[in-house]
Length: 259
Ligand SMILES: [Fe+2]
Ligand SMILES: [Fe+2]
Image (cartoon, rainbow, N blue to C red; front, side, top):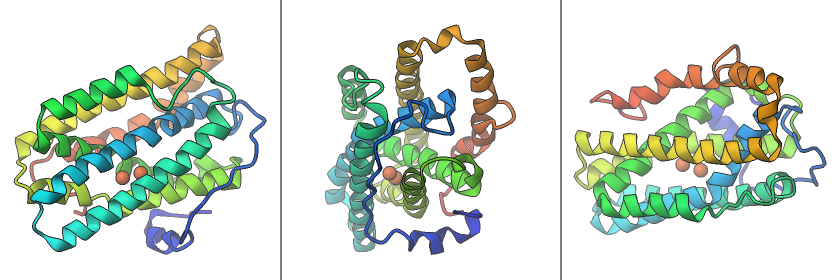
């Protein structure tokens, strides 16, 4: 089990060639028997397979403009990692999400097509800025969860390993797309435009997946669900409350992911 954020690098060696074969999941609320925490994890798992492959395609489209060989190598390493994340989360989706929410699809045509259309219209620099911002959100969330292993107490060991492996690699490659964005001539205004577009799509995507499951389970009728949701997102656990400042740190003009 991960003890603190200071030993992330050592831990990444625990997962040399990964493949997470999760056993059949019999409990609908598999994340600590908590509906809120399970729906949160399910919403992320459902959005990852398409999302991370899309990020890879955006980065690859910019490679021809990139002269720095080291950055090119990092981009290829980034792509390998994201494609493996996508594959492993799809397997988790098949085991943990699909059996309980058969209408919640990894391929959400309207939302994903809109995201792809916006990414196409804004041009290659803002498109890359959108991916760089997404990488910031995932790296900050990764650092946070790796520093709070208590979140995973009681969760299946293989699923815990999958998430921790993913978080470690997000932290590891957090600066790659950011550096590519500036290497191809991106500027601060474009970076911030990409940030707000990404934040918009991240929130709308997460909310649509999350509320699909809330509606499917009729959780909106449960007073306890609202209490638990407040507690998890903003109250005592407060993941959103604790991540707000780290997420906003990206807006500083001289921000760099490795600073
Ligand atoms: Fe990833
Ligand atoms: Fe990533």
